[in-house]
Length: 113
Image (cartoon, rainbow, N blue to C red):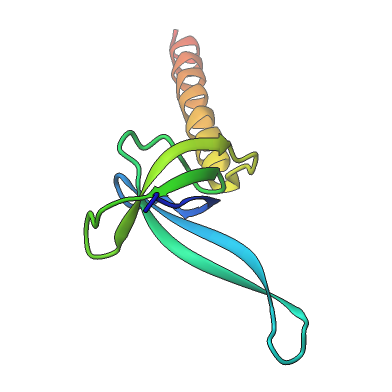
């Protein structure tokens, strides 16, 4: 029996070498015949930690790797274009502190002489 290959979106990348992948699909309700959104959550093994949150990835079935992991990452289909605002603010703050520290020490040297 061939292994299943599916694509989904990485929703969790906080664990080392493990990604939480959501696979969204539409299912027709048996009684009301309306299409309902459903999702399947899979935990996939990412050996090189190449994927991140928001990336669209392709995963393949594998033998059990841990209690929850039953999939392996094949490739990243599309990188996320979302911007992490908190990380940008932290980087800007660090940059401002490093620039401000250099300027303040230079002005103290000039005022002292």
